Length: 100
Image (cartoon, rainbow, N blue to C red):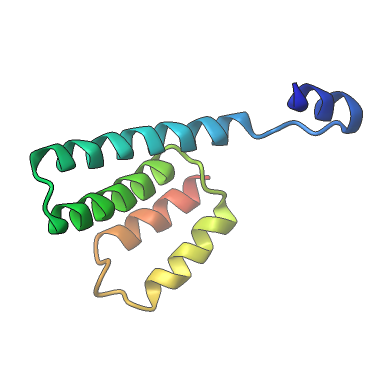
């Protein structure tokens, strides 16, 4: 298809590993949010499902090394503005950035 054309004509190779990691994280996070909505259809459960989706998706993308070191540096800078909100996550992210 189109990706073969792009590769042959201009030498562009899509980031398959990153795209697969994003797909896996989205499917797993979406599955968890869907399971929560099966428990109850209340408004607060929809909010909880959204929060669970975002947090699980974010954690999985970091754990699957989808983020580049530059992306992680930006995220760390944003989290350092409110260090009390992320006391355990911030040191873990800094270690992950050093491993990349």
